[in-house]
Image (cartoon, rainbow, N blue to C red; front, side, top):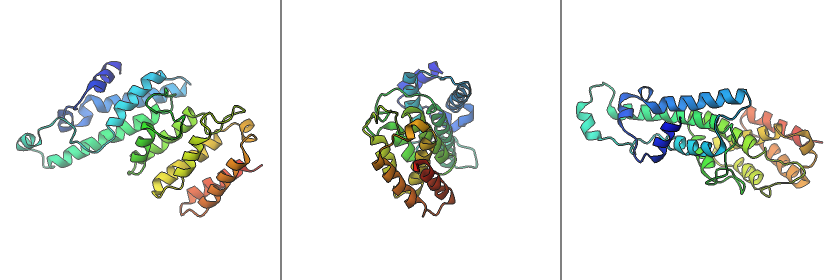
Length: 253
């Protein structure tokens, strides 16, 4: 992992031959699978697969592959088209392969975010939900499955694992409540999948909140959560309506 990761960090243009030959025959595809597997297995034993600082490098590399644009890959398309023999157009083949890598990279990131992430490059939102992780979530969560599902899971893991939920014990809010404010605002986003993803995360974070913390939540925060829950009771999705009921139960005395 370390050997390949260092190569990918310093890489300016990925080798287009990996796309032409097929991602399953290349290293990147299996690199993503290894990361996913290691993270999953370690969490089962309550261990961290990688140190927090290492997770930052992994995230930055994997997030670069979360795209369906192959134009940044080093490939002479005109030259390769002359030698292309498959019945599938070369452009279609490249789109399919880059999309496959996107799927695997998103899945790997979602598992990576089950781990603590060191606060570098605004990855950990001490001053609100800003930075690279949120950019990844917002760009992938609007896509089709399974990519959007990975973004859902990654966001939930990140907030619950890396932000201590959204409520803190007697020490109060380390960020002044900015993370909570930003999540709530995202729940009203005009894009349905973004709004749904952040609301699902909010409810999950509440469920992971210790009962001793619940009693210390300020009244104004309870009011904000109740208003949001009542708003979501009118959602077209039965799942969201059920989660709204769960949120009401959470803030109720």
